[in-house]
Image 1 (cartoon, one colour):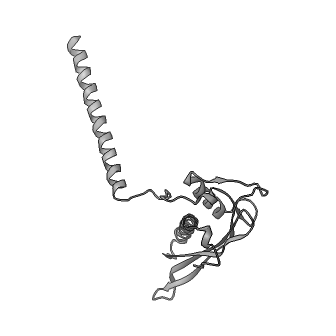
Image 2 (cartoon, rainbow, N blue to C red):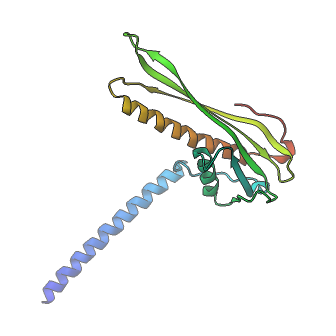
Image 3 (tube, one colour):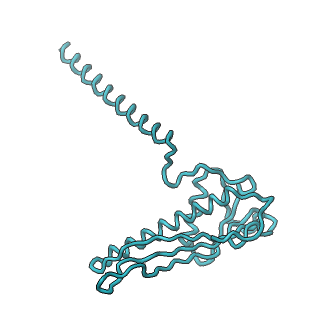
Length: 194
């Protein structure tokens, strides 16, 4: 009976050592990743200026368009931004004015059939101050992605197009946040297209 309990203790020590080695490996890996500057997608190393710590985000159209949801989620992920839907609140307003997406033929194969498309995505936005004066006018972000078109697998090509549009929407939201993070109310004038 004594040797049996000693065997169980040895086995639990082995499991404990294996668990400790696993944790050590994971933390070492994470340390190496963060020390080389790696950040998970969607995490940001910037913060909005204090005058934008409370914000209202609007976009025309009914319900919650995907771009509006993406920008709101990105702002909330910063952690130091308070969003409000109250139209009477005295806070700056980020207006998402338009979102356009179009595709154009990029390549044609030897038989004259389309083999690749170029997706063009553009977002226009502006920032209005709490005093209702324009802070950033005529701002736009333009992104492009290309993808191959397989006429034998149209469904996969459509899914790829949809995936790229969602990716561009996420990228546009992050670019808007970066521009807001570098916002300086002292020199906020005019437009900064593309």
